[in-house]
Image (cartoon, rainbow, N blue to C red; front, top):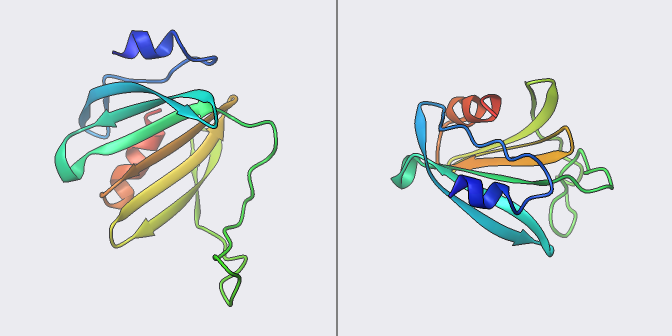
Length: 126
């Protein structure tokens, strides 16, 4: 559960009972590059949204995405939005939306097969 996951993290877990009109369904501990992280699932089925929280890395994250192998899209900028005093990047595709931001030493990834408005609402609830 949430308390068990939170006790194993080097940062304060942000896991509200509900986000974007969806209830928290599960909380799991992950290992990302041998560092603990939290995986939270809000909602269920194809409309579910996952949130990954981990300690932010010491090195800055690149602000631009580059295509694999170079090409004409190298250096393409992703759209940004404000999420509670943090600047987030957003990738909106036909399959879903991913929002990524870092705040107070914690890196957040919000992803789901949902419209950008839903992913943005979940991100802003964190």
